[in-house]
Image 1 (cartoon, rainbow, N blue to C red):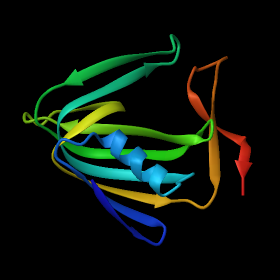
Image 2 (cartoon, one colour):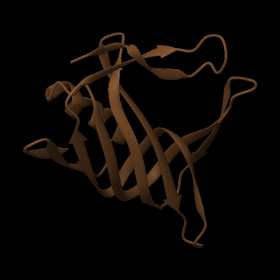
Image 3 (tube, one colour):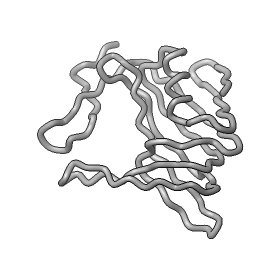
Image 4 (cartoon, rainbow, N blue to C red):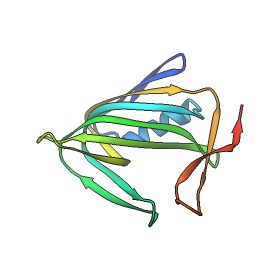
Length: 145
């Protein structure tokens, strides 16, 4: 993995064998990112993504071991308990032209990955919504300029 900074934008290359979320977290920690949007594309050969059932507050995971095109990764970086927190969704193209995806849990690069991180001035923390959804929500009450 390597990256370059251009003002408030980072251009990230994730290399063959590297895991996407771990790589993006490493960049967020190195750059002390408190809030950012993320997008990316690439090629993967091992992925795990989930669909969240709000009513039952559970994830239904899917794991694939095949050549896939990462056709779109969209997400954000924020903080939870003062630590880097990434939240990503991804779609993957299969050789038959079908698309699969959801909440990204893990994905390993098989060729290369190209990602753009746009740093946003500010800080947003997250908190666990224990009552309604079970999700880690933006908490604007913890916002700091």
